[in-house]
Length: 565
Image (cartoon, rainbow, N blue to C red; front, side, top):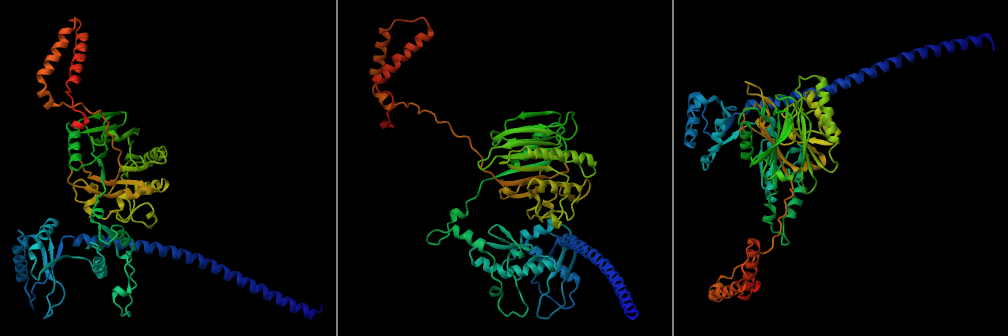
């Protein structure tokens, strides 16, 4: 190779080396950009979740602000209407309805919504001070029948849009023969709750078809259910449709202590008032383990070694006491009972978890014992965990498989995360977060001296038996001097009833024949007695008399035969 060629090759090598260096720099920049993009995506996802949480918080806050408001429609409107005159109109309407309310005192604000139009009546917003006043007004809205005035709730714009969509389909559902009505942003169809997501709503602004043509209802399951309730002629079988399934109420209640005189009787009285079959109690604070039998109930309790701390137990009504198979004390915070059931026996696990402020060791120890207790339950049993878990269950997306969207809280606390991990590990569902209720019916513990509270008492059930639970909610009316509310789980149970023992048919007296043969019977018995030797032994004498009595009885046909019955 000539010197010229070698120099050219050297130049080419230098050029390739420079290109390689540039490529390396570009690759490094790409790597850095890729890492930056991944970081940005993660931050974007976190930001979206944060925005969703903020939206849900704002929605709850707006709902709370609008809770006591009402909208009055159909009241004659005037241009430059003064506040005093508007207040007078509202007062007259409520007085005619029969509501004993002083609007100037009970309402914080009264105003028209929107701008004045000559041919229209603007709705009137009335902000009431108390929820109780609003309920009194709603009870007497029937007195507005026949007038052009009606009263509605003050819904947010989002809820109004959802209700508008659902109203489009309400008439269609009713035409199918179903009983349907709107409740907040849901449609209730034959007792079942349906949201906007249950309907195919592919609405396009340029589509000129009607809403019924554009988006058919997704109600095949409802049609199938109704078809099952029709006879061969297509007529509705109302007996079958209206047949109610027997349900059992299982309750849980942190009573804080049962050391007070008469406390047990107070709890039993409330249990009877709410027709509860089995009531799980926490913080009994009795020592040891035992059983208390009363006429109307039985109490099974399991406490610590020393009196005054923790303790759980079950109060069982007299109708269910024969169904209890077994009762076990795990420790001062956990106990179980096993109940007879036709489909599968039910094991109730009663828990009183450490508070959120407790140490990590106490929480770990509690959940270790609880996991072992769950593992010891027979596989075919329906497992239910119930009690004071001190757990706030949030609405995080990753909890969808173990918790519902009807929880009172948006973010889970540490106890809530632990409870959800237990539910995932034992294939259970937190049914206390499943059912839609007012916020006050979700609160299970009230902050001392305040009007706010938390939902920390929960119920979990095996996922394969989740449909057994019909409802879960708290009841504020029950009172035994505790800051916890009574929580009731309504569920379907096919209990085993003890079979009646067949008894032999008793012999009946033929009274008519006895009257006719009275003299003959007495003479025959006298002859038999006269012919016998007197006995000294009382047992022998009675046996002898019985034989004579039966002999005379058979002879004179004193007993009715089957033909004579």
